[in-house]
Image (tube, rainbow, N blue to C red):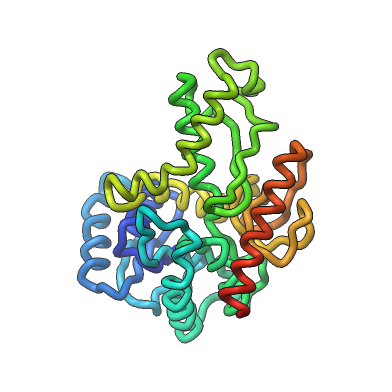
Length: 309
């Protein structure tokens, strides 16, 4: 399988490429960027470690590298400032994203390709990609709340001294201020979270608050997220490449699940080789369902204002 990473010279794109290299699953990694020296340097750096890691083809260049890609992962975008929300980025990033989609349409793309949007605001740009590209909606997905979810799980695990891989709590909704942590089904190693030693409502509220501000905290302290988002991107790509049909909180077009429609947003989604294959509805606490529907309304209003206004 070939994966092209548009914006592969940047922090997010290069970290995703590194995670894919260590994942040893995809056959070819193509880094695409307008800064040719930078992207060629990133590819060369990855190539230098290839003999220790994996037998993959690693190349760098322009948009033409996406023409025969099985997955086109778009990470390019302007960085969020510490004081602005992800949705504040939209007016600065829509024009850039349209240009990237224009390049993709010009060089062409496979009809069974998966377009995987990472650039922020990811839910709005995923919806835009659906409007611009001649692909079935299920083949266009966004990273959604995958990163938010792993942040929440990892920080909760640290606070309660549990293995991060055994902490199971998920965030749905917008990848942004209106995201919804689903505590009603949270578990640790199959045990109900609320019964786990040391867990209190105050601790849960503290960890959720920290998760919501963690993106801005990373930007403030090191300039932008890289390692965790790279790992999150690779996790989704591997689910597609291996047709794992895993349930993941990716962003995809909704047609009725949880009362959501005509908006790209994160809900429980079966992810496989054909993209967002289906959505799963489970019972939520009433306040969680209300918050999720409100999150969809926030995104719907933004789409109407920015993309249709």
